[in-house]
Amino acid sequence: MRYLTNHIIKDLAKKMVFVGGPRQVGKTTLAKALIRDFFSDGEYFNWDYDEDRNDLLAKRWKKNADIIVFDELHKYPHWKNWIKGLYDVSDNDTSILVTGSARLDGYRRGGDSLMGRYHYWRLHPFGLDEIPDGISPNDALKRLMTVGGFPEPFLDGDEREARRWRRERIDRVIREDIRDLESVRNITLIGLFLDQLRRRVGALLVMSNLATDLQISPKTAASWLEILEKMYLIFIVKPYTKNLQRAIQKPPKAFFYDNADVIGDKGAVFENLVASHVLKKINFLQDRDGYQYELKYIRDKEGREVDFVVVRDGYIEELIEVKYSDTSVSKHLQYYANKLNPEKATQIVCKLKRPYSSGKIEVVDPISYFSKFTS
Image (cartoon, rainbow, N blue to C red):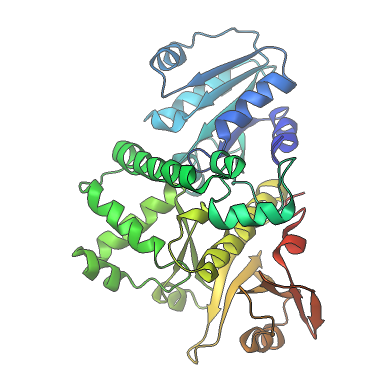
């Protein structure tokens, strides 16, 4: 049972529920498990299947169904108006669950005629907060560092099969999802752009440099970055500053939902692991509790930098520095902990034998820190 299951069940009693997340993160498996385990009579429709698509558009389903699931509905160009009309005239005794691997989250940020009719949840891969039975925490950490947290490769634990799975997944997202949903002419080039990002995890992304490498315009590079984020391949971490203009001018960083997408040393892979875990937590808290969370990094003109800043409703909740093996406290983390006085200041070290405290700063290992992160 995934970490969102009970929350989704609770929300389905009140409104429609939308579940967004990366392709192959387990949305379909979750939806079918909900039908099987919590409802006596459910209907499932997948937009990618011709028969299901035809039945869906014709509204051919049992009128007394307890739940109806519309999987990948965002691929229907008029899905918002369609589901709005269905919900407004439907029997409230029938629960409606909608899943999507891209557009649901994008629509949520803009004007939304569905406002007030649904709750939104974002599903993330497995992590140290959500370890399936039969896998130890140490084994889970090893798998996250090698094959990533997406269900199929994580449960299988085979690095060769994981590489094949990952290549096929990225190819499908680029050649099917992006092609169908976005106006991108050069699909091959955006694949090369993604490869550049895989080698720059945790680094400042200067659009002009990326554009020069691929002989595209900086505007195109920025547009592609946004598309890849909408497709749940990457997520963007922007600088923390109270000056909006300065925040726009400073370069962002990119991280991956699939930890194994990272091409780099173990330090880069571990930094991505921490980033994806923290994002999972703040997405969960935002979707459950309604807080406005943001994940940022902080860097000043003297080059003092801390990897992550967790901001809740405009206030710094936690500073997080990431180290693979260096157990000494970061001087930059000390500086910002004293200057900004956050609720928490944490240094997460992958190869840490014994957690310890140093003033305001807690130095911890990833297994103890991320345990029950989304409970």
